[in-house]
Image (cartoon, rainbow, N blue to C red):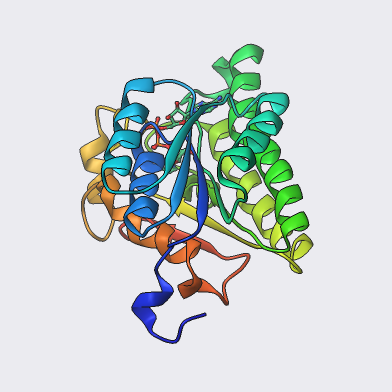
Length: 254
Ligand code: NAI
């Protein structure tokens, strides 16, 4: 680890995978890592145009980037694409399990099908990514997993009833903490719990402006405002952190 603090934030020579990289938080994280010098594997499931544009911009700046179409709720696709990333880049230093979906529905109205879909993306998706990335980390003897959870994993989010979404986030937060212990000899694992951000998922309810005002900063977060935190967790600047769950919510959960 370099002693100069700014050098600790550099990602030159590192390879990062980001899931859900076509939109919102994932796209912002992929940009942050590329700006810090990492080679980035962008995993996306839809919005191919956005991913292609990111690849172009990164390449213009001399960063090696590649896009992979992966449905994270399908374990065989996850496993195959981990191998494809290794074939392309040779190793994985950082894996950000960020893809997710938010279905806001009371449980009394939720169909079994919708319930299963929510669980398959937010829970299975993170478990599959962690499992196959973790096998690589173990073999390499190093690795860094960051899981995008939510402040909804800590609190019963008030604007809408979404018990299953909230509980998927409680699952991945606790799962990440358990992995920090399980993988202690070869990898760090940390969790990011965002509050309200201005992504597709964060756009929404009619009373939402009232809700934003309930945070200490009194506003929604801009998606670029996650970049510094993810870079910190991905880099040597956070070398003594593992199993931490960092809330970034403008002071909502206080
Ligand atoms: P977004 O909807 O802009 O992006 C989500 C991404 O996940 C999309 O690119 C989508 O294609 C991808 N995705 C969905 N299902 C997938 C699947 N089966 N396989 C692969 N990719 C899939 O939303 P946002 O806000 O950027 O969400 C990113 C993460 O942040 C999610 O895990 C979300 O739960 C979490 N989050 C977001 C908050 C917000 O206010 N925007 C608040 C707290 C957490």
